[in-house]
Image (cartoon, rainbow, N blue to C red; front, side, top):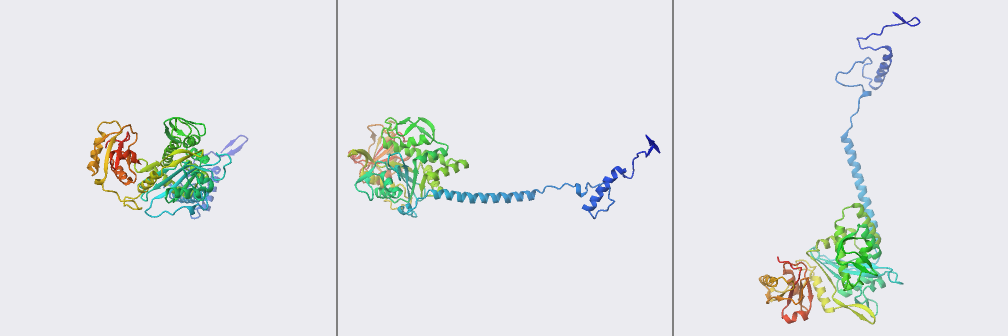
Length: 475
């Protein structure tokens, strides 16, 4: 035994072969053993050896993550969130649709019937632009949209805002846009129904001021503008490929005082309105951003009045967009402007308008011939003459042979006196079924213009006069 310093004895440290440890460490080991007794009472108290199979005392064992349980819990949470989101979205959408309802309007609408085309009246309403004129406001845009029950055909008639007619319940003549001022959408619907003789199944009314918010919510609408517009009342629109914001879009659909951009005044404005509607429908159909869609729905619910749901409005827009280049006819009520008693009116040609409505009805019937459509005449009994208004040599002769092969009685072809941009079919009064039949068989052009004009047709002594325009493409 040795002594350290001041004569205190101490033992020489040595290695313990039996695995024991000095007292300094033994106490800690004993505490662990004691803990093991508590955690694992079945294990012998003197179990101090290392586990050869890799096992460790319970207090040191790491528990593995049970991924199956985690995934199962995550799936349940996700399902709950999806259901909750769907329910919230459903009631949120219904609350927005409730904002668009006007009580009592449904009584002016005719219920849609199975197998019949659905007619929807679309109105753009101008509130507050006329001093002292409040309330409902004037309808600045008026379009009647008809879609066949099978969704394969559609037609649109634009009715100029200054159209002169009799408004139900009012004395004398007035402009059609005043109907909305006097009685809101109910009277406007009744007026269009009396004017056209067509049932109105649905309506959509858009406030012009809110129209800007809807366009902005969409992020703008892309269009090509041929001529810049500078209208001192409506605003300015640049030329070229432009993404129109709300103010520019509103200026486009209202402009009629710029003699360079809209030389035909109200008629050119109606054309711009139809073009913009097509461009806007295209923008909506391409929209995939859910946050932007929510903004559009919110803006629409604040500024649109309708009996339709958002789903049905979207379906209508998609149908019109899908038929834009193959089954959609767009036209304007025929007529001419005239000043009567110091007031500017648009006078509709009654005979031509009657023929247009007949064509309007037949353009939206099903192939089965339902909806009261007139039976088509025999091709052999229809006399046709083709004139070349394109300047392309031999085109009229080629088209004449094609129609002759289909069974028509074709006269010798010739050249038109002037250049035509659009292929046009003329027919005498009461001959619209003949012209519609020829139009359906005329390959190389989609949606040719069809017009009643006895003065043009009678010198040729035929039932249908076809004038080929620059839009014709030889098949």
